[in-house]
Amino acid sequence: QVQLAESGGGLVQPGESLRLSCTASGNIFSIGAMGWYRQAPGKERDLVATITSGGNTNYADSVKGRFTISRDNAKNTVYLQINSLKPEDTAVYYCNAMVITFQRSMGLYWGQGTQVTVSS
Image (cartoon, rainbow, N blue to C red):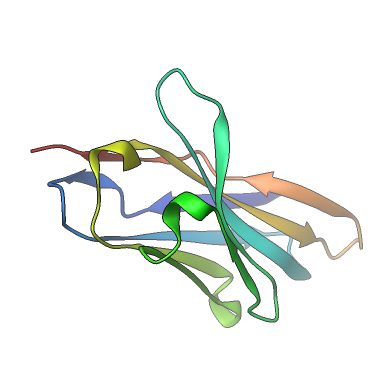
C-alpha cells in the first residue's frame, strides 16, 4: 500500500505565495517521477509540473516563472512553490508519484488533493 498526502493549501489573496507539500509513504522501494496537477471547478485535471528523480523539471506554459517544483528524495516529498498567485490559480491541487514497491511492482499513485483558493 502506498499513500500520498498533500498539505499547504488554503485561502490566499492575489499576489501572495503558497508552498504545497506531498509526502509518499508505505510500501516504497523507490520513486521515479513526481508531479503536480490541478483541477479547477468544471474543468479537467491539468498538468502543472513534473520532476524526475534526478531533478529534471517540466512546467505547463501557464505557470512558468511563477511555480517551482522541487523534491527531497530522502523524505519522499515533492514541493510546489507558487508565487504571485492569481484568481485563475484557484483549483484542487493533486500530486502523483511513480512508485516501485519492494515487490518490484510499479504504479502511479495520487494524493487526495489540497484546495487552493485565490480571492480578495
